Length: 257
Image: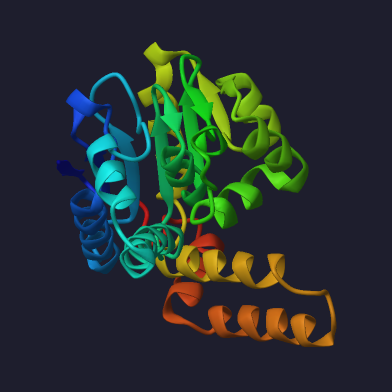
């Protein structure tokens, strides 16, 4: 269902249901939520790569799970939806950087996984679709992350049309942050990880929290004061002091590989 391998300080979390194109159900959602929390708490892990084994990144919801949900009442569907929303929130709020490795189709909820990662690198063979409207459904739980990634205007198009679009279009609208030929996909990701591992672990967590703060608020006196307090706080932290000292002394900071 899931495969986790750790090399150095990088954990690779792979969806492992290739026979159903890594579609998820309630069991996989629970397992993925638990795995993400464990990796976030592991101080030895500095970055997480999320990918899928087999031909697809993630095909969205498992058909058998959808059949079960169709027979549920409102309260059961609400509980199921909350579990999915909680998993996406856990991925989005991880303290360490996350990279989506998108090698093939990412449909429906799979697009939500891509959008909830900090960075998303796709192969030229990747394909995307927000297919919910064709099933008479709504991409509600994934919408905060997808709209944030591609913007309201493009979300209006792809949520409503349920068109399939390719990697170059995903890059153009902001869903992907980089596109690579499939044979170079892992090399592209390794290069990105090399950059990420140069940053201080505490700084990474604080930067992610900073982005959430400034992207969801108004640039007013409160925000300006908050950003000033944040930089003052990190400058006097042990990691901040070590980073400045290493720069002035022309040596590697203690956290760098």
